[in-house]
Image (cartoon, rainbow, N blue to C red; front, top):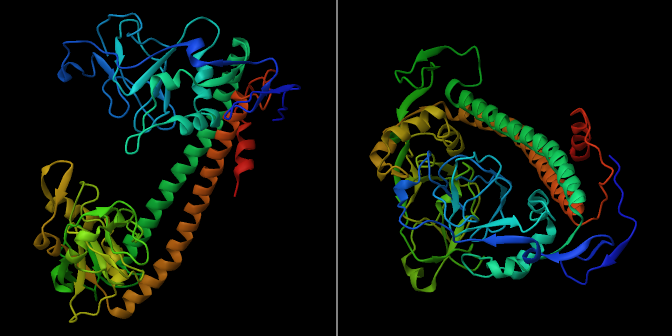
Length: 471
């Protein structure tokens, strides 16, 4: 695909626009579009908003049928007509203005009788006349031009906010509607190719992670020798295990589980000369991330306890159902980093020869994780807790120390290969996302001329994108 720039450009004298094609026009949102937020109907209660209607469009959680949100952002829909502008209609552009601002969506699947409205965190943008298409705006608001404008004008420290009177003064360069439509069609086609390739890479990553976990699970429950005699473990989820391995409960291997206390801390990582307390997110990925900590405030320094120790296993005793019991091996020396009350740290029983890396691998086995789910309790379905005695009652397997070391070495070599492939796939995704962003910005700002572009009749041209981002 060869696309050239326009022949003539002129200076805009506007920071986020720079130069633009000479036949385009400088304009602002308020001259081209109706923009409204904080719309809704009086007298409706939250129970009125269901999958059948009325539908409510919000910036985070949604009820009702889907609207097409870009960048993995999904939105939904609502009822009862008043002001004709309050009722959403197909072709309306939506943009979030609170929190994560600048996410955009086109309304494109409303049926004739569907009624829809917005909450206060979303703008609706609608043409005042037939001089522009919201399909062009859809891409313009995902470009570097709009991002620079937002970064320059957004307000708020904790929750960022884009005010309506700021948004309507967004300046941009606009071509005639025929060219807008052509640019939108070009970007629809080209980004769809890139999105397909990104999705394939994401699927590959998930397959690699599943295969990686399967290799770990087999090694720590069946051993490395396919010829080893097997026995019934007597534990349903373990099944048959090597005959010479011991089947034990965790309480035999772990003498105790120690924990820290809750302290006040600033949500920034501690520096080398500061005291930090771990966040539960330090074990979310099943690999210990010491950078996931908070700096303890001066008044609470005397209250911290239980410094982390290299070689121990950190366990989350309280979390969401998916993450309660998540664990990771402390594989770094980290002075001045302490445990909170929601994390445990293992103290092993000296009567058993235990390699903590082997045991950390065992704690990721699906059957082990299922036992945690069965034992966890909580007043809320979104937050679960597991008691020490229930956690330590879970069964585990213990080979000889020499065999544990062999398994650990085998898994280091094997998982490194999987991790390398995952890293390559992530690199490819990053490159494709960068290309996608650059392509959008170039097209909507007139850096490239797509007026003569014709959509290919086959999808074979997706290979060129893959070749450009191959690693």
